[in-house]
Length: 470
Image (cartoon, rainbow, N blue to C red; front, top):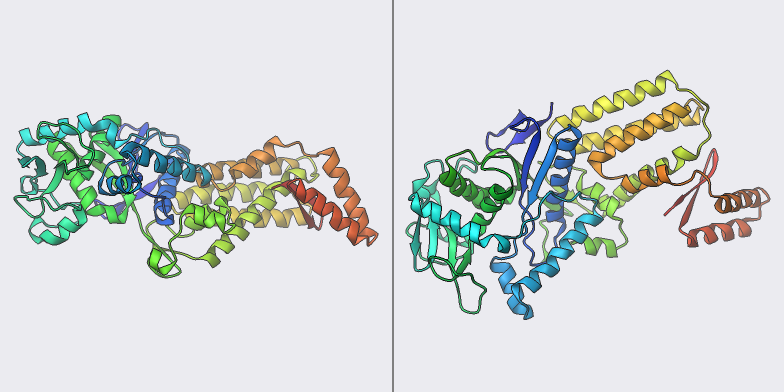
């Protein structure tokens, strides 16, 4: 059974959806004021792995990921570029979708935008006022944390210990409030900023109210899982709990799943240090999306990842091993039948894969299971002890594993969909092999270059030359 570490209880617990069928997952999405950096992308890959494995377990997954398209940063960016808020945020929203597609992150069920749910946010704010959990000051509405006795139950923060200046810095607002820790549900409009009419005057929603509204709008008052990076535990997720549970009287989230940060070359990522990377930065350096995804998965999600360019090169070699194996396996002539040793290896791999994934999404362990099986299968191939039915079982296992890992999707589709031979390519490969035997290396190199120009990569193995499309 799948067990997840629950930040709320600080222990690993068995997970089953509340209704036993549909896993309702809310993931804090991007604030679309800039390109996502690799730290953001690590969290989005975690969300992807989680939802893929929930589906692997047979549950229907309804994942909602918000698009924060109104806050201090988006407004400042739009003003600086002389664009409307919608023009500015739409640009970065599309960049976000391009990034997650490149990293083979499966789309969420819903991507609601904050600006499309202003009416629902105002209704929730009014409900909190009516129930005595919020108050208005000069067009601003604040949540009264003293009205919610369980405030701090997720993060451990106590209202009496919250420093007013520190909290304001985290919140990004300087408004007057009755208590230093009370947080904004609705912010009065500033000059030249976008705003919406409300019962409290023109303004815009606070950051925290956005997620509460959109999660309950599309999922339910009680979520099965809420995900995000560890820096969101306080104040964002703490405040989500307070306003949501104060409004509904129900538990807001059953499982909180938080991903740890990454560092780059052992240091905190910073533009001033020159170690701040977006996906586009790494692609421009010649790295493949497949290797970047692999690198983001090399540490357990609750452990800090040291993202290095050397590690990225190692990931390139790792995915090359996967690609080469998947390209090689379908093209080899194998005898009919199966071997008992191969069947046992594949079944053990399947059991081990599920065992490590059930252990709080141990993806590094799961990738290790895949590479270990590939090593054993290569040994059987070298000994001519792999059979036709074994090949099918191996490819079936890799497809199942990749439905979770998302590292081999294109290669597996190509291996299944391509014809085993292409007569023109096959003839050129045969001609090259003969040229090598005749020591006509100039002709052999010429053929290699000719095929490379067509996107065909050759690999010389003990069984002969195999080819694959780039």
